[in-house]
Image 1 (tube, one colour):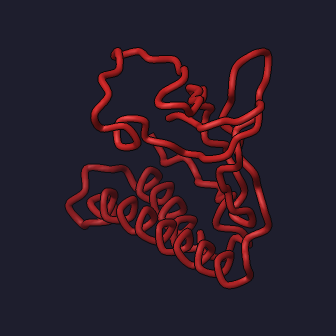
Image 2 (tube, rainbow, N blue to C red):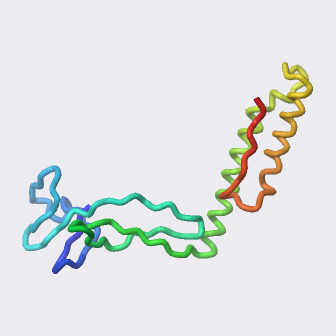
Image 3 (cartoon, rainbow, N blue to C red):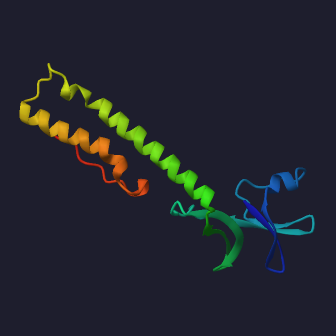
Length: 149
């Protein structure tokens, strides 16, 4: 993505150079320059940051760093409504994963299961830990038990 600059200040970002100047041919790896009186620079992409569910990530104005323009991310507090929705969505995903794990080991509790009674008890304990998973306080830091082998 490109930014339009004037006196080392970003005046427009992001800019799709090909849409801004549809009648100009650009090389495949164009790194910027002056087009029809305006100066454009290539903005170096950075990784989208990991952020806790209580923050919202937004893209800010690029900054000049070591002679290249770099993409900048800003973390701001998410609203209470957004946080609540994220928590609800995460609990839903945890329950779906829990249900899939329970389903995948249903066979261990059938009367014709080839497991010994000791192994069957281990699986019962594991399955109960799965059922109790929603008793944990934070869906973003769930501790999953390891299934018996």
